[in-house]
Amino acid sequence: MNVFDKNKARNSTNAIKRLYISMQYLISRGFYKPMGNSGEELRSALLELSPEIYGSIADEKNEIDGLKYILDRLPAGIHHCNHINLTSDEGFSKTHFKAIIPAKRRRNCYRIDPEQMNIEITRGRSDIYDILTHLTFLYIEADKLLKRIYTGESKSLNRDWIKIEAAVSKKKLNQMELENILIHLASLMGRTYTEVEEAHRHFATKEEPHRFIDIIYGMGKLALDEKVNSNARVIRFSPLLRERLGHHIYGEKWANNIKDILIKKKLINRPIHLISANMHSVMNALFAPKALGAEFDKKPHLNIYQALSEPQNEQLRTKVLKYAQKNGMIYLKDQSGTNIDVQVFDMAFCNEEACSYYSPEDRQYAPVLIVMDYAFGEQAFETIDEFLKPIQVNNRAQYLNMQSISIMGKAGILEGKKGDLMIPNAHIFEGTADNYPFDNQLKASDFSNSELGVQEGTMISVLGTSLQNKELLSYFKHSSWNVIGLEMEGVHYQKAIQAASKIRGNIKPDIVVRYAYYASDNPLETGGTLASGGLGNTGVKPTYLITEKILEQLFNIK
Image (cartoon, rainbow, N blue to C red):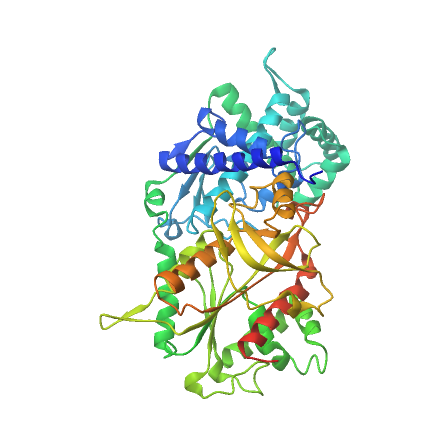
């Protein structure tokens, strides 16, 4: 007896393909109405897929956890806008409009007027897929509300809606009025009062204590306006965005900015190690034990890293940053539009007194570490592909002395819990026949004493965090693919590396690669998706275990 339903898995795969093809078509077309005929294919495919992260999207009741998840990744106020424009970087930063940056996505958004939100796309197609699936979910949920707000036969408004509308107009609500409105809200959403009251507390901010009420009202109002007044919600893709997609414009700028620094600092000929991680773990592993020796005398390094991860310890983080900059670290705040910051570590500055890891070699041979912040989906190919290209010096190609490429990331795990480790030996691309086996210098045995769960096998690179469900993931886990986890960038990194090493000859064919992931969620467990909450301090130990293992291998420490 199979532990997964093959038919459901196949249907899910077909639904993802339909979503993928539909989104590409709509981008080429230039605009569409999400709740009209042009958006029907996206809606039906997403409902058929019913991604785990979107919870009860296919049910009559409104989904709350999925709503929390997407609104952290969409700009504040988007629930009031019926015109969503996806644009390239077209100069909005030079206007008086203030950029709105979502809590969990690095993208600049601009509220042009009460009805229009512009969202800048500088991270490639994966960014568009992310936004469109989230918006489709938002509109499906709004349509559920509409079915209760407006009864078609009598063409009258639901009493719960009338009460909510009256409450929204009030600047302040006393406790009794608030509870009264939350009861109406629960009835309208098909949820319990307890669930709605918890959501109200979750969404509340100091500036907007009743934000949840405003969000549900905004969603319902736009749906009602389209139904009654034919004021349709519309998503547009600017001509410049469509023209620039896939042309690596931002990736090229990003790569050139790094190479300019390498030339300026006379590091261009030195051995280079590229690490995709974050903007704290490598810096802290290199310098924090030395910089904070007085505060943490003889304490384990993990204690230092945990302290640095606490929000209240800004003073400690500043001390480590200044110490790192004094000892050869160059910080490059992104100016290219990729939203990927970079740190360059000149290890010639590091000796036994200054650094936890150091190179005993002569200065001219000391390695240079380039740490890039996380890319997003296809952006990983765009940036790495451009970075690995040679530079032109006096009309001649000068190749980078690349020694290794290390990728550390967060991923969903299919057997285990948050904080566990995944060590891949291949990446496969969801919905395609593309697969990329490789020789990973990191092994599961490297972490055998970590007291964390460690999985070794194949990783699947998905088109988006929302584009999979339990049936599909169970198939990948239990079939001969032996998939241990899912993420969004691995295939794209490896595609760029293999193109540069095996086809273009931009780097040596036996370039050392290292991949390791730590689990941010388990989408096969009920309540274990990203929508259920973040890692918190659970991520500190695996992050630094991976970071230290990468550095140990890089500096040949046994």
